[in-house]
Image (cartoon, rainbow, N blue to C red):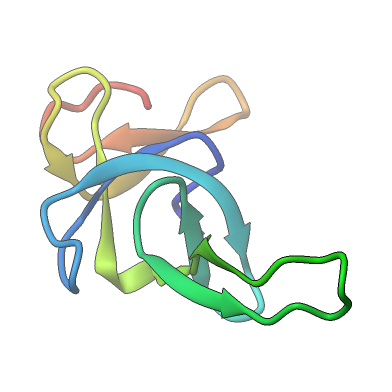
Length: 101
């Protein structure tokens, strides 16, 4: 996967289109990413006992990787990711400004 934890991404499609955020967690098996503050839903929690209150909680659901695009930290534009080898290391490169990510 070309995205990593901590990358700044922009939502390209869906109900939160246009929002930006940092990747909090990557779910490789289902090909989704969890972004803080994006794709939030309300869930009604019923009380399980007399002492516990019923409440409405906000949960963040993961987004498909195809709905997000990386924002280059140098040129601040959404971009695709390329790779180059730099002294026996594979390095991610911005497709627009050719800077290391």
